[in-house]
Length: 70
Image 1 (cartoon, rainbow, N blue to C red):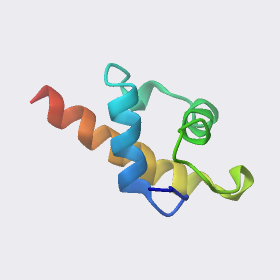
Image 2 (tube, helix red, strand yellow):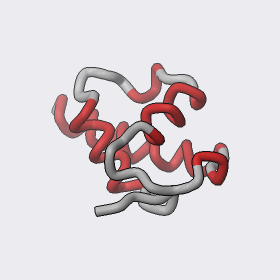
Image 3 (tube, rainbow, N blue to C red):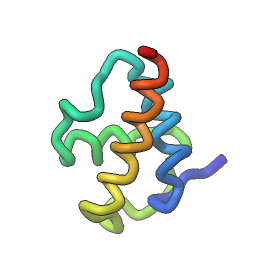
Image 4 (tube, helix red, strand yellow):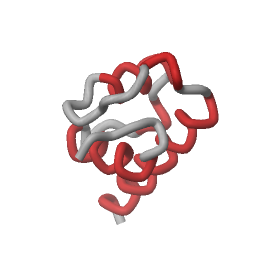
C-alpha cells in the first residue's frame, strides 16, 4: 500500500511497527518528517507536509504506542 500525507493513521501504525520503543512525543517534527519519508511505502512529495499533518501522524503513532503499553 502506498502512503501519502493524507494517510495519517496508516503512517502512525507503520511508524509504531518500525520504531516500537520510541515515544513519538520525544521527537522533533524534523525528525518525525524524516522517519515518515524514509518509510518504504511512503510515496508523496516530502515538501507537501505541514505542522498539522505531522501532528496528526504523531497523534496516530502515540495512540498505537500507548495502546501497546496498556
